[in-house]
Length: 467
Image 1 (tube, rainbow, N blue to C red):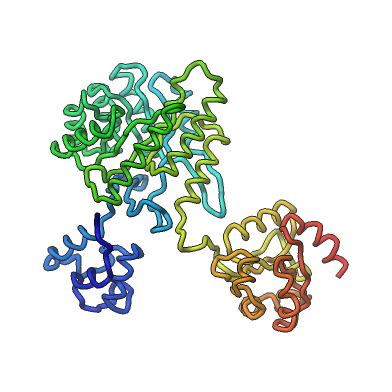
Image 2: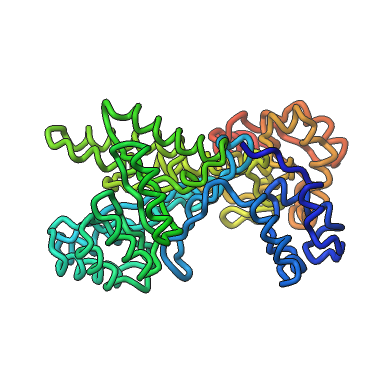
């Protein structure tokens, strides 16, 4: 097990020039940032010089993540997975969110392929200001024919810039797909105990990442990884098998064991990204499609939580995909930093000098909930967003991050006094206790709004008009 690294350990290996080129006051401050994973080695220009090569290599060995980062694709659309440092997100932020790929197959007609690929590309959902999307297309060989597979991969390559995963255990079929998409650097899925040599040759020849698949067990997977390593494959993704229904416990146990062994015990053979295939539920032909979609949805959610770096799914239904995209987003936020928006004044609709002025905090979930309600009501108004370090209204009031002085300061930095003919402002109902203090600090008349932003429309209609 690795010992905990201290900034002093890192500082000893840095150039110690205190040149400030990294943006920090001195090398010790930069060392602390490196330990906390808030900075990267390449932000120190001196350490990148040839004369510091030995120190750089030592630092990299200390600071590199236990889970190797693997890239799929090329250019602007490269997809990075892995790169994890810790077992639990409260220890440190998870990097590189779980990538979700949707499958197509080589027996689809061209119009079917186009429709499905466009659906994959266009699926988008805005959640607290961020656009949630799918990440890749998995092309499955169903025909068993190399020419058919090659043509399908070529068509799909012309339809989308999303990274590709080529799915076949037959080396000749895989090579046909690679010939059609070699410049895209697709993921090879998969090398097994039967075909590892041929697949490894393809991976090295085309410089592509490769999946080591061993559903038989972790000992077989370890042997396969070592064999691929010895053959020269460096960018490996692990597939320990995804088993639905009665096999869920076994699946989760394997995923957890792989990540625990790599992160806690520094096992480099298991220190690679993990791949799950929730679409295996579709092998059960005697179930209603909605039941299979539900099984795929909950299996995907379990694997996102239990360390999957890449998933291949089949269903494109919103109720299957969107909950998992939101779950992924929540898990991969930085637990040390509340999700916040920029403070300042926002305009909704076409407000004028007589329009209402509302106030809220810069906690992202609060802001986007309020903004969505204002937009849905079609209100013309201004919204003053106060910096509360990303805390919600109630928490900010309780923690003294939202005070009368802060509101007065935010109002003073805005141009609302010049823009409006009135001096009235609506504060959230959960900040009601501040109303008197805010009036004294600002000189404005303060109206206490509803506890929930869903009541804004009624409040403006009944209260604002009367005042």
